[in-house]
Image (cartoon, rainbow, N blue to C red; front, top):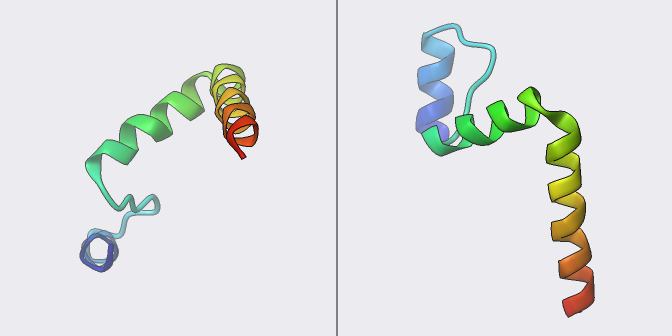
Length: 51
C-alpha cells in the first residue's frame, strides 16, 4: 500500500488504489450502486447467519 500511495502522490492522482484488482470493484460500485448494495447486503446476511 505504501508503494501505491507514494506512486499516486508522484503522479498527482486523486484515487489511489492498493491493487489493480480494486479498480474493478470500484468501477462496479460506481457503475451500478443499487446492484453493488444488494450484493453487499447479501454477503452481510450470509456472514450474520454463520455467526
